[in-house]
Image (cartoon, rainbow, N blue to C red):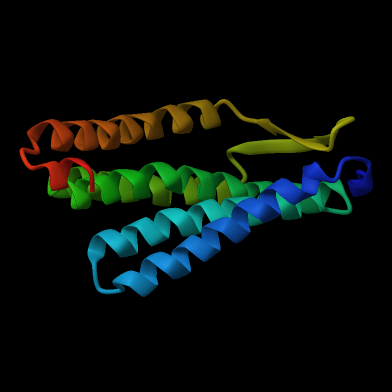
Length: 172
C-alpha cells in the first residue's frame, strides 16, 4: 500500500473533485428539477463525481486486487462523460439526433460490459507514486470511439452560438 501521508494531494484531489461535483448536482437540480437539460447536466456531474470517488478508492486501496476492482469502475464512469456531455449539448442547443443518442448510450453499455468482463484493464502494478493500471488494446479503441461524441458536443455548442441572434442567447 502507498503511504497516503507522503503526498496528501494524492488523495485530496479526487475527494475535492467529488465534493465539488456533488455540490453542483444539488445546486443544478434545486434550480429546476424537471428540465431535461438540467437532469442531463446533473448526470454529467454525477459521472465526474463517481469517477473521482472511484479514483480515490483506488488510490486508498490496501492492495492491488482492491485497486483493480476500483479501476474497473472508474473507467466506465469516465467514459460516461463523453456520452452525457453529447446528450446534454444536443438537448441544450435543441439539436437532438435520436439515432446518435441511442448509439452513444449503446456504446456506454458496451463499455460497462467490457469493463465488468475484465477486457479493458489487464492488471495493476504498484509504482513509486501509487497504483498504475495496465490496459488491453481494447481501451484505446474504446477511448477513440468516445472522442467523436465529445467533438459533436462541442460542434453543437459552436453552431448554436453562431446561430444565436440575440445577446441573451449568446451569453446564457
